[in-house]
Length: 90
Image (cartoon, rainbow, N blue to C red; front, side, top):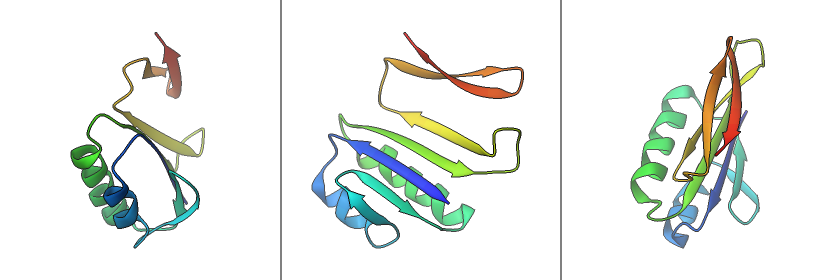
């Protein structure tokens, strides 16, 4: 499962993502896509988000059962703590 949360991004980017994922709430996208499609979508988000921000969460085979990426929000960063991904608020 893939979850993508967008804030302050162009409507055209949101429209493009609806081709691949469902948007149950504004800026929240959910779906099941291959890893290759997920990577391409993330590249598009990072390239076209402008001054917005994004969080990508997807299932993977690790202790937590998921991994995530943050783009565009300098107030938060991902920190690896003995193999666990945590979010640090600056």
